[in-house]
Image (cartoon, rainbow, N blue to C red):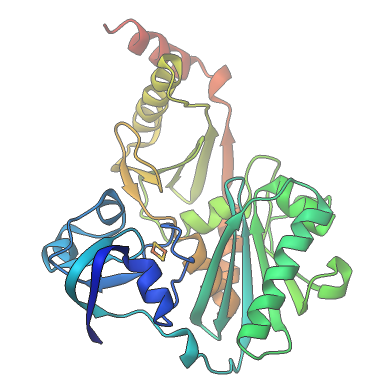
Amino acid sequence: MKLTINSQTKTSLREYLVREGYSFPCGGKGLCGRCKIIAPSLTETPLDLRFLSENERADGVRLACDKYFEGELTIDCTLAKASTITKIDEPLVFSILNDQNTIIGIADGDTLVETLVLPAPDVNTRDLRAVVGKNAIELYEKYNVAKANVLLISGTPERVFAITELREFSTYGESYDASEFMLPAEEVFVLPTPNETIGSNLILNLLDREEGSLIIDGSTYSLIKDNSVFVARVTSESTELGLIAHEATIAYFNSEFGVKEVLSVNKNIPLATPILSQAEEVALRALAFPRVRTAINKLARKIVVLDLANDATWQDLFSEISHKD
Ligand code: FES
């Protein structure tokens, strides 16, 4: 919808649009990349570079939540008005528990309605259940539903075990009566946690990726090759040693498996192309389609954890790179 807006003083576009009743998918926190508007006169920001393709930016697409304007501005706005909210017929909720944030999304069948990106609480049962439960209830109230049919949980092993109090690793997802976890839904579906280092968030980010693509997510490096998923955890902080370890790990995957491209989830790091996390999108598909849950279980059974710190090839690569300069 085309809108012409006006302000005598420098004004936050997000605040202006919220006052006009528009709702921002991640609350305007700059985390989802979905508050797209067409406004070629607005200067591109790092947020646009992070989430939008070159073609989109050339077509005048911008993200609304970090922009300011002064005077008259015409935009084409695709954001929904909060007041147009209607009842959800098939309420499904997913919750993605990361160390950085907690994401809660509500869907109507396979259509995403809203996502909340919240700070990550401490890793304990009470705080995690409180954050997920309270915010799910707020979404139910907002969308006039009693509760979700299914609440899907994905996360790091520590967070999934804390919220569910489950203790067994598993290579398949399982349904539970939601009252067992004191969460507001009919049923809770917990995605697989194959071992203590590999959680379901990693699997969501790997599903359907091309063979030979090395995906870096935080300190986890993973690649699908010949019906296996090879995963290594390497601390690659931005210290000199961390960067050498990072480079050695890429070289290792390349020499052992052949790397077609190096991709990094939600982060700019050397030698890698940043990509967006697909965890939310795949979680939504897993909620709506049993075949996606089956594909996730299959992938969970293919994980091979590599111990690079004790691998002679990796150590050689590390020392070769550290002596390069
Ligand atoms: S609302 Fe999520 S990036 Fe703008």
